[in-house]
Image (cartoon, rainbow, N blue to C red; front, side, top):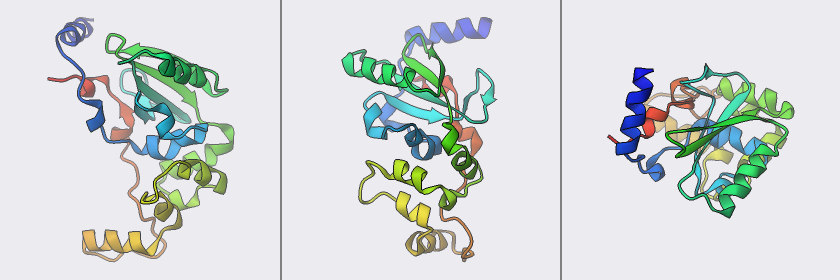
Length: 192
């Protein structure tokens, strides 16, 4: 309780970190698009998507925690929030950091649970065609995502040059997720 009170006091005196400096999680890149919207749809409110919340249960299987900034509660923000709440996979939501962010809990769509397992195991090339189409939608022409799904020779060579060692033909060409980077922790967003 005392720790929570200290955090509340800190929040009143501190601002949030610059959200544009936050690197997208693998959950944001590979799983969030499976809900039917591109990352661009959520801009400028998207903070990230995670596999859990350190303050709730940590990692939760077959769920994502979609975090939006509440910096400008305009009609676009309301539309995005309502579209999330209207999803059949919507579970719940809550505010954090004195209402500066909202966290939406979503179940992984049933049709993409196998893709979710491939994601958790770093087997991106095994994503279904339907999942790949959703993930690739709205990506720039220079996106590495098609290379990841196809295990491209170019991306394989890039990693071989970077690591100085040969990568087996059967290996994926993108690193497996690091679970600690995929769990939401509100404290990382407080400016010190």
